[in-house]
Image (cartoon, rainbow, N blue to C red; front, top):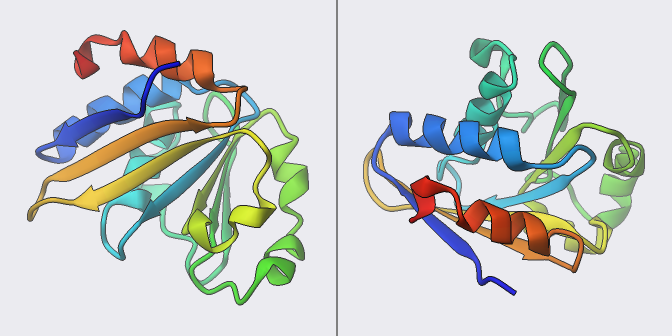
Length: 161
């Protein structure tokens, strides 16, 4: 089984390239855990993935105060949760994440480490590290068995070589 994949983004253009690769590679119905410090670039990555799938990038914003955003104008639905202001697992579960998790879209959960017990057994985990003014490190991993092939296939993409 492959280890986590690391991608160093030196600028927004690199993040857009990563977003394009991930949008094409992430299977329908996938839950993606996003972790990282405030301002690390979690929403910027969701924006890049959504834009690659046909969403207007200007419509993609952090759901910190509304807790969930739904984007349905692109190739497939994107559901974007933010657990930063969630008090506990029960409050997160009140949002009905299972319906989103079971859909054919991609469900992103920012600050997923706060609600990890609510995530499915298998999901893609992306950790974002702020490495400079405009640079970021993205660490992509597969949690559970279901996404091991995704990770292996992703590792073969030239942007990771």
